[in-house]
Length: 130
Length: 130
Image 1: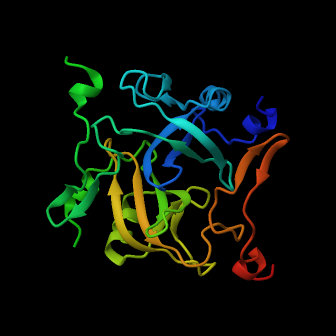
Image 2: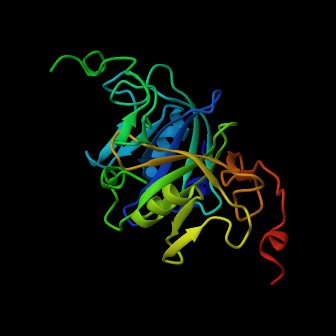
Image 3: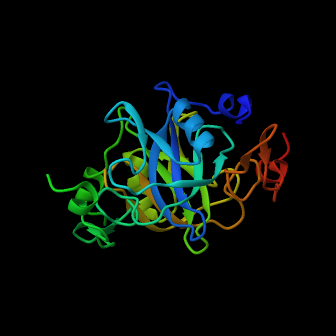
């Protein structure tokens, strides 16, 4: 049972959202940044399965519901200002919808952004053939 | 010289901002989450010293300008959607204005949030006596 003050202490923004950083708990890899609303935080704490809020779909997003790439929460952390979350979690497989381990696979190069990580699982496998 | 497409590929939000995760490059510690505007990204890439945008002050925030706790950029990363940045950096000392190593020092406990990290440098030392 989540203590009520846990949710009440989070400073959700004007859209009712808070940014959440997903970090692999044992390796320290920063996998992705997504957003949560109050309901997503509550569900994640209650179930241990990470649930975000999809701004594009305007709905709760249970990570892995279509790709199978589920995230299991190890520990939630709140920052000093209460307006950012850090999720220590276990992510087998890939976090990124492109099939890469993490979403931060672009770094500056002399000609613009260059890709620095390979696709591990093709999106066709992750999401099925169109 | 930063290639023009580097800045043009970042999807700044309606306020002209993008969230930036600060990660210690060698230990993997997630230190803080802050915000950057186009000018802050450009300055950070040009100087190698991390510059954010302070939403509370409405101005560029050269990390460490009052506390001395400067961050040196190792590498910038952009995520798949272009709307989040990961800063691999070197942060000696402390990142948090509370004097803790990182800002994510609260975790859920049975009675609400509990503090899980100690103050390393007192705010009085960081910011001077009031």
